[in-house]
Amino acid sequence: MTVIRVNFSHVPYLGAFSFATDQLLIVPSRFEKIPQKATETLGVPMVRTLVSESSLIGILSTGNTNGIIVPDLIDTDEERLEEELDTKVERIPGKYTALGNQVLANDNGAIVNPDLPDEAIESIGRVLDVPVRQSTVAGLKNVGASGIATNKGVLLHPDVTEEELEIVEDVLGVPADIGTALSGIKYPGICITANSNGAVTGEDTTGPELGRIESALDFIS
Image 1 (cartoon, one colour):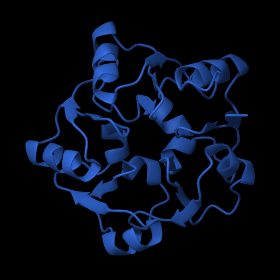
Image 2 (cartoon, one colour):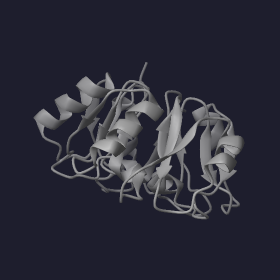
Image 3 (tube, helix red, strand yellow):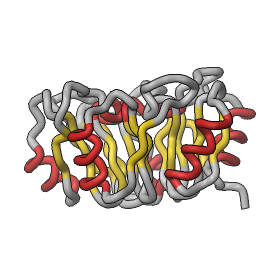
Image 4 (tube, one colour):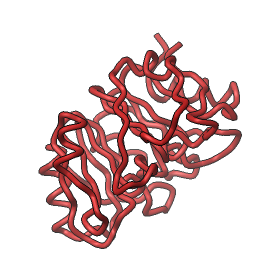
């Protein structure tokens, strides 16, 4: 299966507490129960760590195969993270700490909160090595929470406008569709962890939602 339902230590909000690239899956070191089938589905090694001593890895940080970004205003040891993750980790200047909620990215591009300052946008583009564009998703500025993106597809908040969807497709370079997870939650970014190999979502996700996730992220052959 390329899309499966699992909880991490009884927590269904996988996107809030983890994130994946095509190189690795990052999960909280405090979570004791991470099903092996999650790493098998995503097809990458799992790394256990914390961001600023927090388990909210998917909320506080995000990235792609080129690098990982973390907030500047919280106590994050980038050197330790770089050693643990074996990839570039860099702080992003500005007042925003929940970068995972503010940035929707893959290896082709990044959509960011329209309120992010120019310095932060420039840093994000440099670390992730992609073009960056400011936009909303469904009129919401927390674009990272409002979608989940891989190098194959994007699943977006169901209230996204056609114009917003076209911007996402243009910047991220892959098709986008709409859907929910965890029995109707409209924020895929806090519910799902995914990469080009597969996706994992909480156990409350329904069968029809699984089908939409599988289709949007291009796992249907």
